[in-house]
Image 1: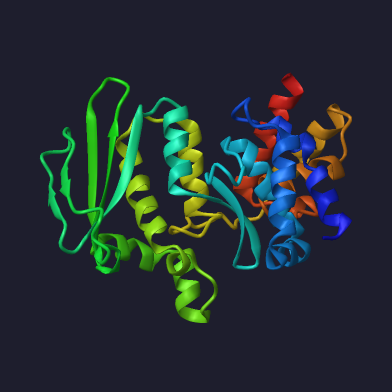
Image 2: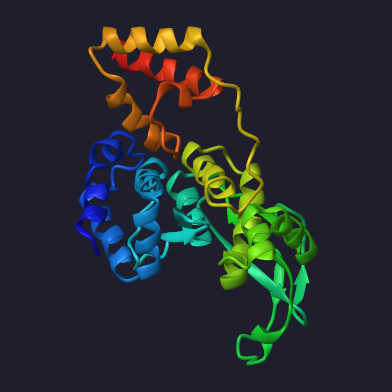
Length: 297
């Protein structure tokens, strides 16, 4: 693996440490895990070389969401997807975030297969799911649905169920699946269908759990940068002249240059931003708010 790839990761130390959501996440440890992932996956390394900004964004997202790349934990991974390095969060990673944020005490997502006995006794009770774990043919039978049951911090149970048609309807609208249908590009719905089915019900169920910022960020990331959902339309209105003047004045007042800011924005907005004119009007609003906050600090 080329040294410049390692340098790209090392350059993100400051950005990484600035947005850490969980004090247990340390740059040096995650740096090691990221390098291990790149060393053991030639294609991932190639994608990182061709699209270094996506690697920068993925590394910073580890800190911003607060989830580890530790391969032993199986919570999150760096994966190549649609020409980008993406932070992928497993369904176990999402459940971990929910527990760590004290949105729930515990929970599990389970596939229901043809031939299983399943009874939903209301959303506030655990469902009854009967099957033989010793049935060798069970895993060969079609999945007919999925459910997630959690216990809240008040001791109540919450259950969310989806039949497979509902899951596939969401899959069919995802950008990752559309890319597979069009160009047969590698897709998690093809390589890890069971995992994706569980993630789908967890993401829907999380809407009814106590709100937690880190969990919301994780779901938003998966649905947009992760390509698992329908990305919202982005504002493409060019930045206004008034906004350009305001940003320039703030940079001058802070004795900072545009180059200083461009590096941060490239990481935060997950795309190359070389000139101030590359910003949209909506992004201009966010940049001005960011600079005002930095100036007041």
